[in-house]
Structures are given as structure tokens and as C-alpha cells.
Image 1 (cartoon, rainbow, N blue to C red):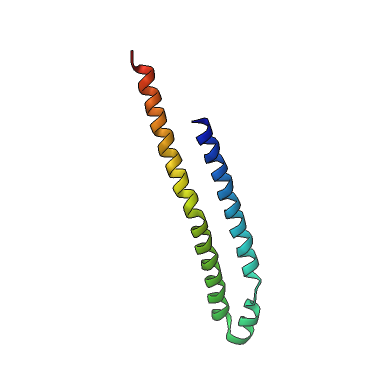
Image 2 (cartoon, rainbow, N blue to C red; image 1 turned 180 degrees about the vertical axis):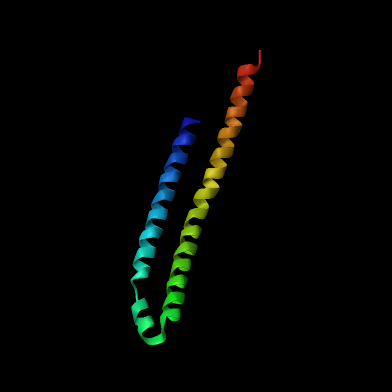
Length: 93
């Protein structure tokens, strides 16, 4: 059970790394080509481009996080099963 909890902690750390990477990506997207769009096509086009870039980063982050969420759910279920078995063994005469 301790090993499962350690694996879960490592999964959470990996998720934090993905979140940090997506925040950095959003920061980089903010500075790209939007001033050029604003200059020629106006603020609305630049705003749409920024929103599209932000949504793309969010979709990529969600796609990258999905396996980790499933893994955490499986680990939580296994820990719950093990705790139930342990509690059943300790209460039996």
C-alpha cells in the first residue's frame, strides 16, 4: 500500500510539471504574432488568435493529463480495496 501511495505522489508531481509547462506555453503564445494581426486586421482578429492559441494549449494539456487522472483513480480504488481487506482481517477473530 505504501508503494501505491508513493506512485500516486509521483503521478501528482508529473501532473504539476504538465501544468507548469502549459502555463509557460500560454505565456509564450501571448507574445507571438498578435501585434502583427492587430496592426493589419484589428484588435478583434488578434483577440481571436490569442483565444485560439490559449484553447489549443488547454486541449493539449488536458490530453496529456488524461492518462494520469485514470491512473490516480485506479490507484485510489486499489488502496481502498486493500484498506477494506486489511480492516476485515483485523476485525475477524
